[in-house]
Amino acid sequence: METDIYNCFDRYERRFARAMAAIPNRRPWVAEEKAQIISTVHDCLGIRDEWVPQIRTETVSRSKHAGFSLELLRFTSWPGTVGTAWLYVPEEKADKLPAVLLCCGHGYRGKWDPQYQAMARHLARLGALVIVPDNIGQGERESMGHADAVVPFACGTSMQGLIVMETMGWVRWLNQNPRVDSRRIAACGNSGGGTLTIFLGALCPELAVLCSSGYPSSFEFVARKEKKHCHCNIIPRVVGEIEMWQVYGCFAPRPLFLFQGNSDYLFPSAIFYINARKVQKTFVMAGAEKSFSFKVVEGDHKWDLNRIDLVGRFLAANLGLPHHLSPQNEEVFPADKATQCLEKWPAEALTTDDLARRITGQNPPAGLKLWDVFPPDMPADAATIKPLYGHVCDVRQVFAQFEAFLKRS
View 1 (cartoon, rainbow, N blue to C red):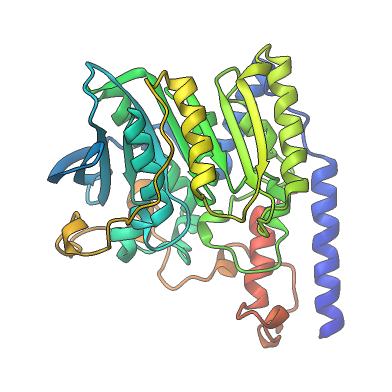
View 2: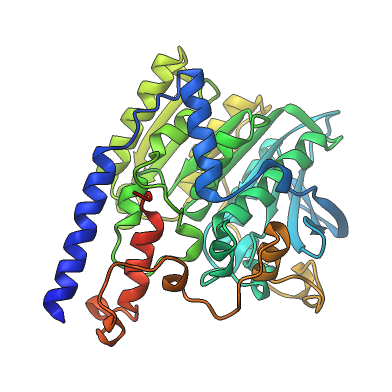
């Protein structure tokens, strides 16, 4: 059995190598090839433009704070899909405000996470309206399901695809908001928010500025990790089809800033630099070299005050914010009833699985495992193998992830 498993890993390593050797050389600075990249993003995520929802919001409460006011929002995206968000409104009054969509990363706290609160406060004090939605299955929406959702894949979409489509709805909401200058809309995100921003950059022409961190690297590098992924991190069939630099390159000639911590063990800086070099070439070829910047900074994976300051300076320069301030180290809002957008989760609200079924019209059964949807190349009795490297992870999950990521041959 052990020899068979070693052979399984070897076969997948060879399949990854073959897929990368045959990846199409799609150049984002060539209009036809850029269109092919964007079409491939749609296919891999399992999304359709007609599935993008219209966001409808209602304000639950408002409160005043130093330099901004905070509006707690309840929203619906698709029918039956309930959501929660915070809207930071700057003190400075203007007919039309620049706006930033702040994309949360992994973590059950969502918009409550201290790093996202600190970033949103800082950007609001600089003069931007900032919206921070809870992603599907995170924050106050945890009951929907997220990290282990399998039904979306069985329906022909993906966990990340659902999140991307809903967030595209938020971009359109900002674009149509009477308080917002539609020419000055930006998105920024770290970690899982970095994942989200890479796709928004390719799919949202409404965005004028983009900042992405804690993720820029390589889809193949992410796919080959021998551990359990959060299911929002699985992008079906992407390896051998497109790479990150091509998707980021679709944002040219608009201003793009990528950065990374030098001690980020999830995404090594060496791989970040390779991606950045290729993205830079895209901007050079598009005649927009000055619109692209990248940086490796001191620190690990999360946003800290230094990185919050970096993002603030970048967005201030590119959104025409009136002034610059240093970010503050201050207490954040606790996750209590005073900062909840919902008193309790509505019993009638859709789960992630039911949402996927309703959008796609498919009806796969409950209780599926990832290896049921993406049957891996492995011995039938692989379930008896002990977890890898001491992690509590079924080897079938790892091989099913490999199978999910790989381009179908």
